[in-house]
Image 1 (cartoon, rainbow, N blue to C red):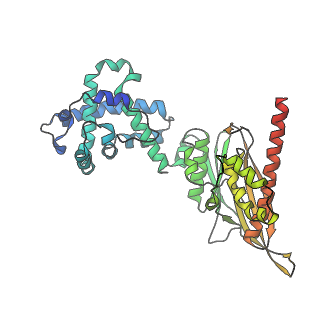
Image 2: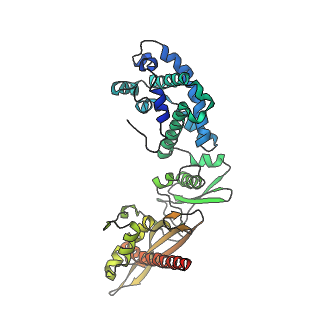
Image 3: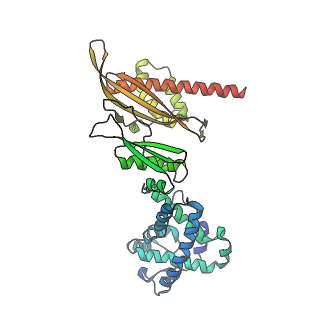
Length: 384
């Protein structure tokens, strides 16, 4: 039977609808012999609507925009047609399911007719809504609809934040070229605040609002994980700072069932040569986001400084690298605790982008090792 990852279990609904004969709920458009299913769909539509609203009061924040958007998707014919074989696994075979994808209104009528039939069979469940099979179906529809909207990144986060009484402002960051501008957006709601940068005002505002709503629990925290959101800002400068994409560096070869934390510690302190440590430093720094519990985010920028550094043969133009690390101030091993974030910045100059990034990464990794040593000492003292 098809299933939806993360969706509410449909066991109660499936047990109830299994008692409904197929011929009773198949509309004429899908091969039904009478108009019984189409008439029942009229009542089932109203019954299901009430239960979907009840499910929303259990699962959604009381936000008019979000409630309206989720409701509209959850009870739509398109949505019913897409999930018809999940909702009615015994009544819908492959042939009927294929036909329903082309006749979506009839697919919706079939689901609504099934709701009316189950309601008639389970009149005694009306006084016990927590055990209602129709409420079980409604909760599933709301969960899947909301997940769909969030995973498709379609929710207007800025609009939702404004409805909550929040505010989103954006400013153009100095130091970036005209062909590659960067904007900083700040989203606020009460005492809560989040920042994000983007290549245009709209994206930066949406990202900042989305992060803040996720922090407040109004939107799923998984949203921000699906799209990298930079929440730190390069310093003002007369030359252009260009962000560096670190996603391609994520990956590790683990040995003997070691954890990511153990891999990071081994690869950073395994006594390799200075040249190899320098070569691999940027990869280790990038991987800290998934290996070290106190590292929330690492962002990197590079820029020509228009100054010079001495080499063995001559002075050459220098490249400067900047790393901003966002740290979690409170955690308990792998369990993150609520609390503020802190940003540390590091810079280094080198003869090339690669050289500058390696040098600044060595500084960052040394900082991480000091932080780990401090935490281990504190843990040891607390156990004595």
